[in-house]
Image (cartoon, rainbow, N blue to C red; front, top):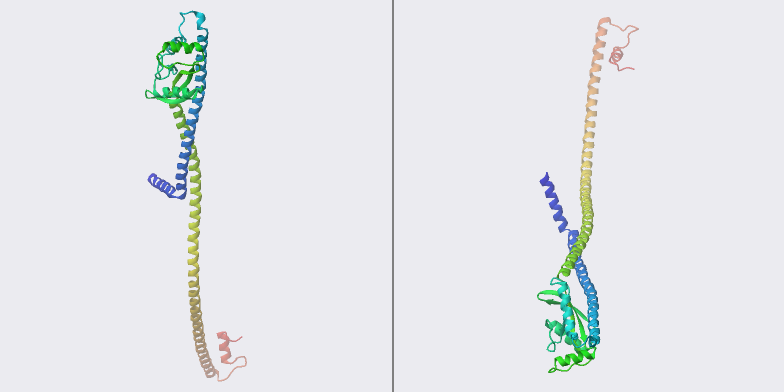
Length: 337
């Protein structure tokens, strides 16, 4: 019994897959997968862009604060005497101290680097950073730049903020430290501040969220599509079953009509034959009754004749209260009224 139920269920599933409802469900599932993938991709890129924009603003604020602090120190350095470190040294020691406090596992790394080939101590750490600094120098654009780059096989969010020679003391100091190179001028781009933030954990998190969104949306759409397809398949099956039954009934009705016509013809022939047979039987019966009546009449007359003869022999005459022998015989036979 369980095997029969399983076979019927398997046939039902195969019939559903081969039906129009099944094909429509497959198309809907493919469309749902595409929609789910698109929504997940949109969620991923939107989250990433939002994160980048937010962190870029935070990093820019931090770099502006550091630049303002160093610029202020350069402005008032003469008040601390000749033993006070130059702004570049002060800045380098400050950034190094901050990075040590944050630790090697920190998600925040701050650097100040010079232009490629004109740096005093720290050059750009890679070609992308050097390119960004040279773009600042070419465009004289002081707006920071944030982008996602790969450093040592890891993706990081890098924000580069140009460092300008805003004070004449900075220009004079750099020209004294680099007398054999091209001279610096006021408002030249001397280098840049750079902040790198690793994105591995964040990217993994939004990937997981994107997959969750995609799977959840796909399951919801698939459930809705499956429910609608099953209902449509049931309705179509009922309609096909009703149409099949109606077709079968029409075939039987047409067959009955055809058989009825033949039956009527046969009934007419049988009835005609019956009437003919009955007529012949009635005619035959009437002839037989007439023959029997004639035989009874002959026997009756013979009986009357015999009775009259016998009475005449006994008396030789008829008494007054005696009737004719044939009348007595008819009375006895129940023929007279």
